[in-house]
Each structure stands twice: as C-alpha cells, then as structure tokens.
Image 1 (cartoon, rainbow, N blue to C red):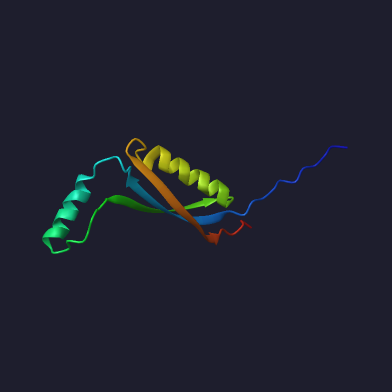
Image 2 (image 1 turned 135 degrees about the vertical axis):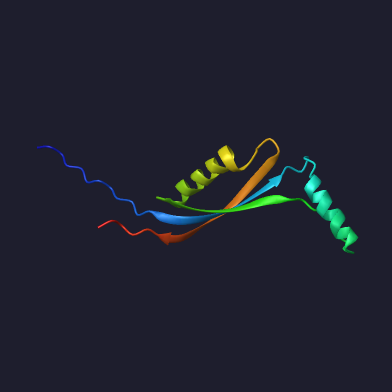
Length: 102
C-alpha cells in the first residue's frame, strides 16, 4: 500500500508594515540642523533637537506573522536602510486574510 500525503494549505495573510528609519545617534544630521535653525528663526526657540528620518509603508502577503516579520527585516537590511549610518524599526499589523483559491 502506497502512503498518501495530503498537501497542507496555508491561508495567506496580508500585512502592513510601518517602517521608521533614522540616523544612528553618532551620525551628524545636517538636514535636521537646517530644520532646527529654520524653526529658531520662526520663533520656536524651545526646540532642542531635530533629527530627520524616513517613514515607509509597505503591504505584503505571507503565511504567518513570523514569516512577514522575517521578510520585512530582510527588506530593511538589504535595501531600505544603510546599516552603516542608519537604524530601523517597524510595526506590523494584519490587514486581511487572503481568500483561498477555489
């Protein structure tokens, strides 16, 4: 008798990643300094420091939240952040479960 195997089906989930990329604290931020100077000229004397960063949203489909987290982490490491001078963090939320094909 030949054993039969049932293929496991996974229900894909859709996630939204909100990614925040900022300069490392030890890296000078000339854009932040320029904004702070502009704010001071506008009368906002109490602003002590400005750091400029990037905010990125992306939507992806994965079999689980853990897999989605791994994918976003690799995307940030390989493309979105320059790890020599930047750090990143992200929030991930499920926005929908994909329908199974009929």
